[in-house]
Amino acid sequence: MNLLIAYFNKKGGTAKTTSNLNVAAALAEQGRRVLMIDLDPQASLTMAVGADITAMEGSVYDVLLDESVPVESVITGTTIGSVELLPAHPDLAAAELELLNVLERERVLAHRLNTLDLSTWDYVLIDSPPALNIISINILVAADALIIPIEPHPLSLMVLKRLFETLAKIRRLNPDLEILGFLPTKVHSNSRLAADMLLTLEEQYPDLPLLPVIPLSVRSAESTAERTSVLQYMPRSPVAVAYRSVATWIEEPAGPVDAPVAPARSASEELHV
Ligand SMILES: Nc1ncnc2c1ncn2[C@@H]1O[C@H](COP(=O)(O)OP(=O)(O)OP(=O)(O)O)[C@@H](O)[C@H]1O
Ligand SMILES: [Mg+2]
Image (cartoon, rainbow, N blue to C red):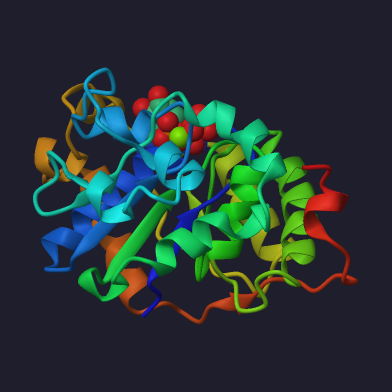
């Protein structure tokens, strides 16, 4: 069982946030204790689970930039049953620059999470920004495992190449990082684009499992508008059923795979962050 799982893809709009939220809901439904961490300055996950960012006392920004803030003091409840959240705030965009002068800037998140009693939760699910920046590097260094949500789109496969180059460089900073697999999202059953993408993924990344496919569904956006998960909003919808399958898959993965290895150099230097 993996503890710290990040939903990660540099490409925007691949359903990282939606998947984080709904898998958290599904794991909680299966009796698991889940903490979500929003590390995207867009704060989409934070807003999607009902938090009011204008009234927030503290956020992950404070956790990263101020060691005197206890991490647990920032954790809040959500509209998703027992699921808890370390929220984001748009201020997090500034952390990018502010972290540049911090010692071991790639490990700040890992250090801060080490101050928590992580045994409180069965899973910690991290939502990532659509970027390869210092926050993303912090996520890759802190995480035990990655899930790569990917949508049928002509650019999806092109973006993956750069992502895997980054993951190869990260190995020096986090040798134990595992890639659980690709999570195909927004898949229309009759779409040739989707069928082609799934085939190409299997051909180009034969060692990486494909997680259960998430169908294209308007229910996803509707449930977000209602500030809840699709499991609560429409429990028997195909998309809710699919997210339950993903949660079950995570509990019994079909064999995680190590990230690829690249020559050792400073990841942050090579990535210019
Ligand atoms: N299964 C689905 N079917 C249809 N639309 C979906 C589905 N899942 C997510 N969406 C929609 O796709 C859009 C992007 O989803 P989401 O915000 O989860 O992606 P993201 O990868 O987190 O985006 P970003 O990169 O900006 O953080 C949203 O409008 C969301 O409602
Ligand atoms: Mg997002």
